[in-house]
Image 1: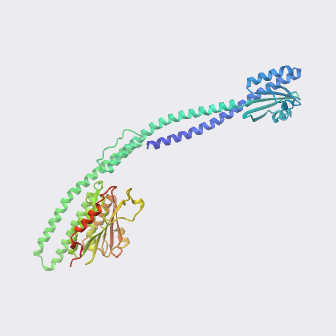
Image 2: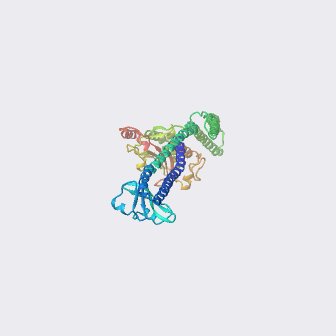
Image 3: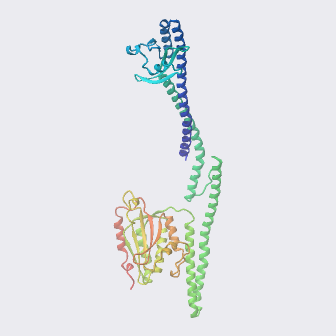
Length: 497
């Protein structure tokens, strides 16, 4: 931020300097040129008046040569006086023979001999040097006696102009340096509390203990923002502490009465008439559903307490372990659970997230599967894409699919399935509407995503995508995974008889 503020201040200072110094330089250049022309005109008028008096007195041959030499030395140029017929009366410098006979071919002299009262000023280049030429007629009353021409090299003018531009550039550089120092101090004064505020905000976002941000430096608006942030952080810490207390206390306060209620219902069974037993079974089912709902709510509350850092987990091993755990339950419901796909190695997930995700998805798939149906636990990599590859060529994502052969869901139902407490109208009894919501939240907490799609042969394909670590496993990883799959008991992948 300091760099951006400094760049903005310097850009504004450069713009102001350019808008000020460029017009000033052009004005100085023009005024210097006009001053030189004005001085040349005054000198030409002085020489013209002296030449007119000398010509009237007949002393032009004796007085004019010395006068033009003296004038040329004073102005650092050349002075030439010609007669009315174009002949040279006096020259401060030797002239070529062809020019000494007739000077009327020069435009400025021809204009002066034409009787123009105005001064003729021309700029020409002779021998690579730029000259300023000023011509003025020599008159006595209405009688034209000749013309005077002054030639001044413009090097002196250009030197003064260049020196002025250099001084302006140095002054601008000095001003810009001073502005940079002031802007740097101001930018640091402005940005330091904002940077500190950002650091404390990151600490709060990472789940660390919120500490008050400093509010004693910086502009008033930044100090006010820091004070508001401290109030927000304190309130958030209070809310998080209250949520932690709820998650810790509700687990005991809610589960204990539910367990006691279930025990009482079980004790009532011997004393009930046969016709009342269905009502007892319904009450027991609802009690179990309420217990599962409480467990889901507490799990979501614990997960939302604060940020949890994802860690590396072995997906192959976890899926194999879930296969062993759930296979007996699938067999009791006359369904089959199989593990297929390719070894995917490690993935990043919050501790315990993958187990909860698989348990919820397998539980939903079991309730939806028909008798003799098959639920596939499929490990795979997503479609290859250069944008989703590590530097060593491995995919950056891994996917776990739970595919059942149940009735499936419509597109609208799949869109709403992750909402809390939402259940499909034709869904099996016993669900709480929290399982898929918890799956999505666990996937997001792990940096991944959960999706629902229609299975190719009918049913539902619940997929969870997780990010793979930069470095995972080793050269022998696939072989070890293959060995684990061979150690799974054969009956676990067969439908019960």
